[in-house]
Length: 148
Image 1 (tube, rainbow, N blue to C red):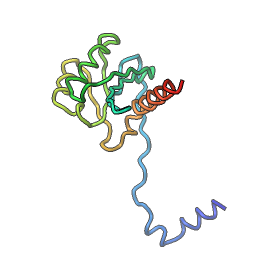
Image 2 (cartoon, rainbow, N blue to C red):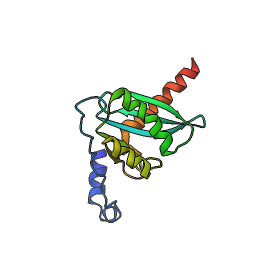
Image 3 (tube, rainbow, N blue to C red):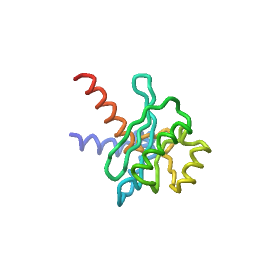
């Protein structure tokens, strides 16, 4: 029955005239990294009215969460530097287009440390899915800890 409906709709001139002309773009996956801490994803999320920075490694899915006092580039860079000291300098980071990642200060930080800074598509957080999944996991683990 489903095939009959699909065929009927595909042959309907009125349906075809009003159908969406723009097709969804195919998913373009990120390249698989060769080593840990080669590429990381970074994002800011809010939980219980507190802001946190999450940093996730694309190789291992390992992530770290840091509490932020404010969402400035200076604060974010201050939280990232100890991660770089522990894990090594990365090759690339992926963030959204929001502050503080779009700031001149963060751009200078990337240049000084010698890593490439890529941003996800505006208003499309799914394009930085690795970090979005880590945020989901961190929030879920937090809720689980509170219920125990």
